[in-house]
Image 1 (cartoon, rainbow, N blue to C red):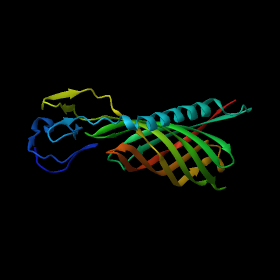
Image 2 (image 1 turned 120 degrees about the vertical axis):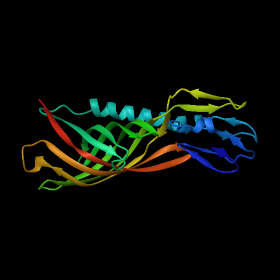
Image 3 (image 1 turned 90 degrees about the vertical axis):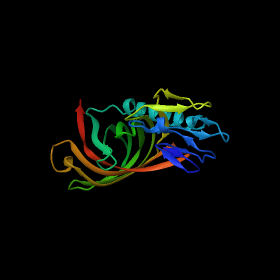
Image 4 (image 1 turned 30 degrees about the vertical axis):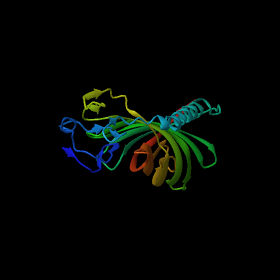
Amino acid sequence: MRIFGRWLRCDESVVERVPTEKTLQPLFRENIFFVELQTITHSQWHCVVHNKKINICAISLIINLLLIANLTFGQEEKEEKMIPINISYFGETFAHPGVQAGYENNFFRKFIFTASMGTRIHQRNHAGFFLSSGVDWRHTFGFGYSMEFGLGLGYLHTWVHGGKIYVVDDGGKVSSKSNYGRSHFMPSVKIGLIGWDFRQKTNLPLRLNADIIAFGRYPFNNYMLPHVAIKLGGTYYFSIK
């Protein structure tokens, strides 16, 4: 592949306009999908490093860990304690599948703290692990139907999937790079218009959910990349006396 005065996207980076012709064939053979290059001068290439974005990602990670700790240890003691555990499919349609496991705590009327972790994969592109927490508003009708809306903050870590990472130094030498992944800030919005709580009419401690999750991934080429995922699963309410 030859690059001459054009823009080229490579997964999560953009190769900037090149003033002179440069052959990068070794970088684009089979199973190589992730190259980070940036024009520093007219002839130099350097790996793009997103150190400027690490603060917001670290803050998001700390917030999520604190909220998860609060949910785990902050419930009031009752004669019978309910432990709601949610297991759901989490994917961008069914092309980029994933799974999510979560826990919730009803802290004020219809408002619920949520905390979850999950993983998703984009074949031959990237794989990700995330922590997310937020606040949901949920209304359940007497016959069992329920709906909910929520806002969340998350931390997402992604790794290249499907190939090695290569970089080009100032002298044009190609070398492999360790796959430590990268950190992302992950805000989210939940729209749950399909839910059913079997506890309203039966003794079965189960609630089923079908939600739409809109979330962002930042940084991505210095901006936030939007995603839309579906979440299909159920919450089982374990009783501990």
